[in-house]
Length: 147
Image (cartoon, rainbow, N blue to C red):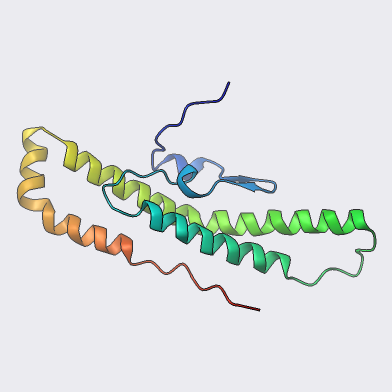
């Protein structure tokens, strides 16, 4: 029986593993975010660029001289993929925490119906939230080079 999909809290990424061996969580599985900040699709595109860069970087390294047989080459390639995914996970962890935290906060403020939350949302937070959303959209995920 498969487990149900659920929202990931920001603090779960601090201690959780997002990769193991040659498997890694990417896209909405890594950072499921509500549409409050309008970054879901863009974050997944960032993931694709960073993942491609990390895997290509790991796979294009020179093979060691000790790699003679087919089994040795496959094991070395497996290790390279594993290393590329570790680099990817390290690079994307904080960006994902940042996105999830922002959407968590913005959703809480926008859905809040208490007097304090309503007052803050309507009178104090609009300028702060607008700046926060623009800040999250300004991210450089690096470049892919054509070899």
